[in-house]
Each structure stands twice: as structure tokens, then as C-alpha cells.
Length: 107
Length: 121
Image 1 (cartoon, rainbow over the protein chains, first blue to last red):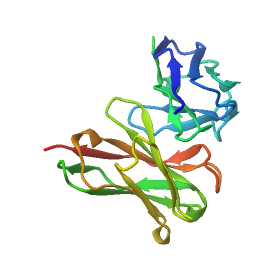
Image 2 (cartoon, rainbow over the protein chains, first blue to last red; image 1 turned 30 degrees about the vertical axis):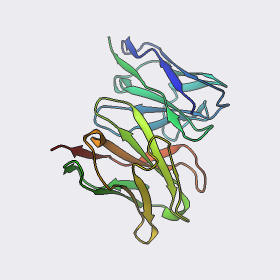
Image 3 (tube, each protein chain N blue to C red; image 1 turned 90 degrees about the horizontal axis):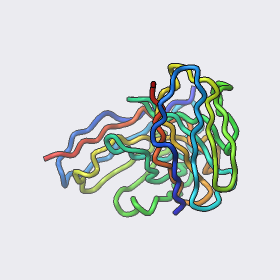
């Protein structure tokens, strides 16, 4: 099973700041990595798929990069609605797995 | 509009059985994989398994194999997650989600609203 590690566990930032979240895989997942956003009391929402493609309706301030084992989600300028938990997920190998999440909270 | 609507919250006792549902609408139900995800209180997301309603091909994550059963009734566009004997550790929010693309184990979007299952004596 591929293990995903996310860092940091918590990121405390102010609105307007840039957020950089990391996801590392225990073995190569090629570009088969996605990022999801989950707000309290809500279901997760797909943000980025295939490492760098924004899902439908996702604002351009969200971007993803990386391949192989190291991936990054960047939020260029945090909006109030972006404070949430972000999970990475791989589908290179079954079982698909999620990372433990990074919480982005307000500083 | 593509929608997944899950059944309501459940409160059960240990040892009881349970079947929760996820009804798809706004798309061809038989053409897209549906997955189930567990989220224990205050914890992260865990894939449980997926099913292709077109032919009922089902895959389970090793952690959940033998613990739950995933099924689908294509005549009513509904997928199910069931337990034969619940444990307190099954207390969690359960989400269903549809694959983004047809006939592919793709990324999952959209998601249902979640079903909260509470198991307590």
C-alpha cells in the first residue's frame, strides 16, 4: 500500500498570504495524485487531479505541481473560504489512499 | 445536475446490522464507478471500496475486506454499504462519491452529503 505523508500538519496563515502544502508518496505514483478540500461539516471537494489539473469550477488561485513522489498544492492568495483541511490522494495503485491532511487555519 | 443523495443518520447498537444508501441522479448510473469513504470522528479520509454498477464489479481496500459489503441496484440507481454486525469502532461519517469519468476508476467527484453512523450500547 502506498503511504502518503503531508506536511505541515497545520499551517497558520492570514488572508492574502500564500499557502504551500506538501504531499510525499512512499513510492512513485507518477502523476496520479489529487488534492481535495474539506470544510467543517461538509463533504470533501476535488480541487486538483492528475497532479496539476484544476477540477471544474476551482479558482485559478489553486495550483498543483509535482510528479513521482513529491507534490505541492499552492494557494496563491488565501481567501476567507480557503481555511479548511486539504487531503492528497493517490490512485496509482490499489488500494487508493489518502494522506492524513493539512489544516490551513487563520493566524 | 449530477447528485448523490445519501440516506439519513443512523443510531445502532453493537451487533446490529445496517445498510446505508447512496442514490445517484442526473447521469447514467451504470456507467460510473461509485466509491465509499469512511471518516471517523475528528480523523482523516479512508477509502473503503468501489463498485461499478454496470456489472457490479467491486473492489475493497484490504482494511475493509470482509468487514463491509458494497452493492448496487441499478434499477433504482442506488449504491449500498452494509454491515452484518456493527462495532462501536464503526462509528463514523460515511461518504459515497462518483468517479469523475465514465467507465474509469478515476478521481471521485461529486460526493454525497454523508451519512453519520453511531454505534453505541
